[in-house]
Picture 1: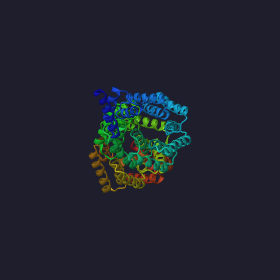
Picture 2: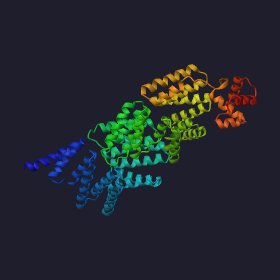
Picture 3: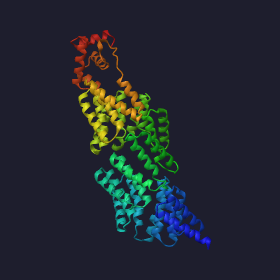
Picture 4: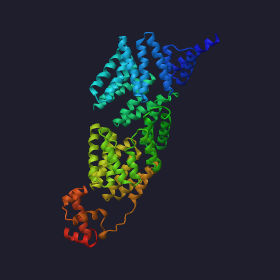
Length: 549
């Protein structure tokens, strides 16, 4: 009698723990009950779900497989299909496509053989719709998600309905109907945050929606849903899957908002958690966030090692690795890397993640025309997507180009616009980098006070953040230059004079230097004044006499 009482007690406690989202206790009690006497299929399904939620994926698939066979033997085709679908979903999620696809195919066949109208028919449509979405067949994917959603609504099943709407939202965003897609995703998230969706599918939806926010540069929405995701994870301390992905997104947002020590801690925790489970693609993303923070803090050797580990884990280490090469002074490697990754990247939204670094590196390498093309492409993408983050990046890049082209007034307007956007987005690092450019524009316009204010503010921000690389660059920029050129000519004026001495016209000079003819004329006027000459031929003679050519 005593031997039979304990399993019944363990089973009851397991069910109660599962209902209360105490996943570890649920798994422990249900496993104890199962070891004493084999569980019935509904309790085996609970055991499988609890095992998954505490990171015991092999045990989860085993329990679901047992439940599937038992339900199949009793003639419960919908239940058998549901368990097969859950097992397949887990296997696909950890990269075991063949086995996972086999379980989903079995679920589909069981339903076809049974001929029953049930909500599980909606379940098995979801993987097929995702396959179509991945293949780029957006029309067929949307139709399949819509069919699944209709089944979910007809049977009042929140899980299938939410997954179908999630897919429809993803298709709309991919099709360029971003406003409609985001509206649908927000609706799905309302149901998730209200607890209407079961935990396994809630976690999938959180991760998918945050991925879309990241893809369309919707920082504010990403921040809001990441906070909700964090609360959801923290309400279930035993939860193992999803928590790592949540920490990666938190690290990214913390880095953007200037909380670099907290961001690094979150990225390290994400890597540690994700490494416990097989097939977690987000491991590389966690390492990339760590590498970015090491680079920004001037820990260049550590950054290089971590970028390489991110690459080994499947996350391309660009554009961060190219920016690291620039910080190391290896401009040839930086330029080759950024050109390579831009050539490989086709989708406009993905290119927008590379183009800001491309502008910076090409400008440093002296390729002004290439930098201008990159900045113009970024501006086009920013206009189409209408995202404040992209608008700020574009204004900063275009302002930097104008600054180098010596269109200082126009540059200043764009750079001040970028600064305002960065402040609105609470991005202290990007704001400080832009203030450096504002200071240089002020200096070029002979506004010494304005330049001093902007550069000092940027320095304070870099010191607070611990941005060692940027502090070194700022030191170089603010060092007092000594002109060694004859006649007191600046380096730029020497460059212009050398080209004049080759016989080039003002138009040809402007094309070579990527500046306007008006700017060329201003440089020539300054050169003539400093040298005390009044003609191009006299200036050319001076250049030859003083070894400038």
